Length: 242
Image (cartoon, one colour):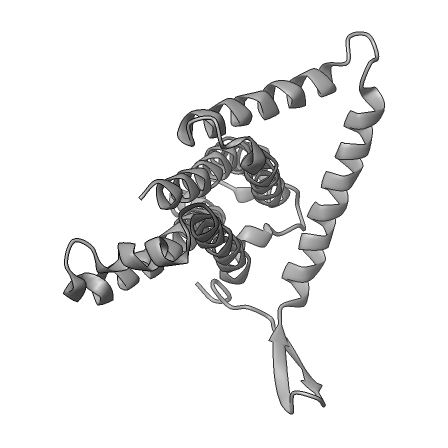
């Protein structure tokens, strides 16, 4: 269990703020890799537009159309302007989850700071959108419903949505990292306990381990990205309609 959950952070002093800022260089580096990958893919997709049998453009066009339809349905025809946001969140979280499948790489979503930053982004956009749609007075009034003394509970409920949205993604990705950190040593100890030489079983162990990791990273990572994006869409839609 040594090393699991430990975050290698660094600090630097900011003269103007008179304080030390702490950051995770690994998360920042791998987030940069994800962003570069998304930009590169976007360039390839745009360049493939108009070409015959452009499968990659067709796939992304269908995905974007699916998100656009869901946004329009959730917000009764006013959700199209949120489609780029929700789709971008989906692609970013998807690539972040998938990055952990590559040996030597780490998912940025395996760091709570990344998940919390995405949750705060959605939180700010959702509440700003609600204020713009309903007006500030009506927005504030909703916190006093059904009775004025419900104000503290309504505020806690909104903060709880932010926490649950962020921790749900982090918990699933982090749980997968813990599982795979434990599986390898346990399997090797099991082979040793029953008297089988580890070297002869290495191909089977390695193949099973990589297949399971690929399944979790690709399939489960895709599901978590979709869930996170759809929850963001639902959260924005509910706040605008309340």
